[in-house]
Amino acid sequence: MKVMVLVLAVLTVTAVAVAAAHGTAAAPEFRSPAVWSAAGLTFLLALMGWMPTPLDVAVWPSLWILEKSRTARRLPTMAEAMLDFHLGYVVTGFLALAFLALGALVMHGTGRDFSDSGVSFGRQLVDMYAATLGEWSRWIIAVVAFITMFSTTLTVLDGYARTLAHGLGLLADTDTEARRRDTLLLMPVVAGLALVVIAFFVTGLRALVDVATVLAFLAAPVLAWLNLKVVRGEAVRPEHRPGPVLTALTWAGLAFLVGFGLVWVWVRWLR
Image (cartoon, rainbow, N blue to C red; front, side, top):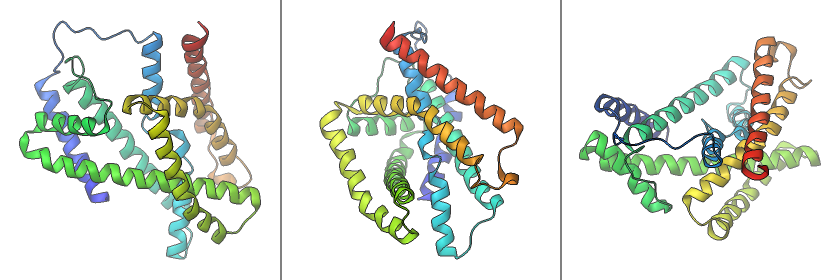
């Protein structure tokens, strides 16, 4: 899966470079819709909710590192743990910007729109690459995109189940083996609940993404505060806690999340 993600990254960067060389595909008379409106702010929140990844995944790398240490029979050093986290986060952020740029160059302002059907959306995504790179890339990107999304599904399924299991384990004061068993039991529960939401509560792909991303952004201030509380708590050694600059940046980010969330609530519901 890592190889497939690497192939997708190379193809995406190549596609962005080719699209940038050709220039934007938007019609000359096209004018972007207003950002500072109810629809525009909802779009911004949906974009930032998963840009480059939702904040609720912050604890997942820690749990995965602990699981790796069990098989490696040693705990990683702080440097190893931070390298693992930073590498994943930087690559995720870079690819998020690349996908955003590709959509802006190839689709924005052309009159085309993404379908609410998951199958049709997948076909549009492959068509976007093929139109930029050429027909030779169609089957490559189709296979790679499928494997990437499949691995993402496995990642989310494991991450949510593992987080729930460890959270319940902390409340019940259970041992590591019990939490590992609970993770396996919770995986089908999480998958089942996701299928229920998709089947009965969401009318299309766009609605699903909008609901998930907006909720992720509105929940972000609480999760950010919890993260800050943990990394500055007694469980983290003083030399490994954030310094003054990073702490100030964190508080600034927390203030932004709260402020922008309140603006959206006012524009969307109270105005």
